[in-house]
Structure formats: structure tokens, C-alpha cells
Length: 111
Image 1 (cartoon, rainbow, N blue to C red):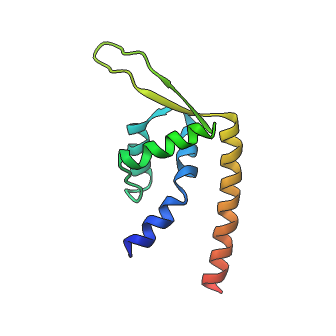
Image 2: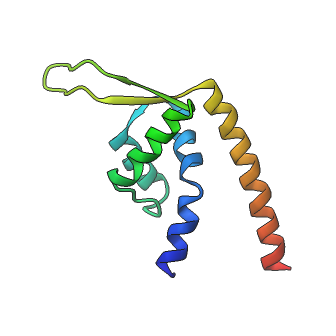
Image 3: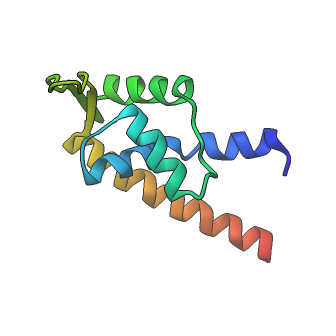
């Protein structure tokens, strides 16, 4: 597959996927990277330089909030992100839009 097009298609859904993972529970950045990679069978293998700007933008838009954990023994402090009520609403809106767009694309491509 042409990597340029694959990158563009993936970029359009990252916000939705990250919000969905955070809807289940608060997670730190590397945890999001691993879960997204594992649950997508490695289709979404993000680098930190891709993930963190998205998280910062979602936080700026008040769709997620972050908090630092307390260090515990050898465990270092981690920045955990969790979805806000606004984020949950926006997630449902994005997913509804995604389903509509996907259905229209299917109609065109299979018609």
C-alpha cells in the first residue's frame, strides 16, 4: 500500500481512537502506544512524537485532562490522561461522523 495514503487515512482517525481508549480508563502515553498497537494488530504503531502532540491538543480542547501519579518505590511518576465529559460527547459525534463517511465511501466504492 502507498505509505503516503496510509498515513493520511490513519491520521484522520487517531483522535477518535485515543479518546475511545481513554473512555475505558485513564492511561499514560506509552500505555496508549502499546494498546493501540496491540489492539490494531500493529496497524497503528505510533511514535511518541506523534502521540504527544495529539494528547496536548486534546487537552487544550478540554477533551482530556491529565494528572501526574505519585512515585511509588521504584515506580516513577507518570502523566495519566483521562477523557472529560466534553470528550465523551465529542467522541460520540466523531464516531457518528466516521460511520456516515465510511458508509458513503462504501457506497461509492462498491456501487
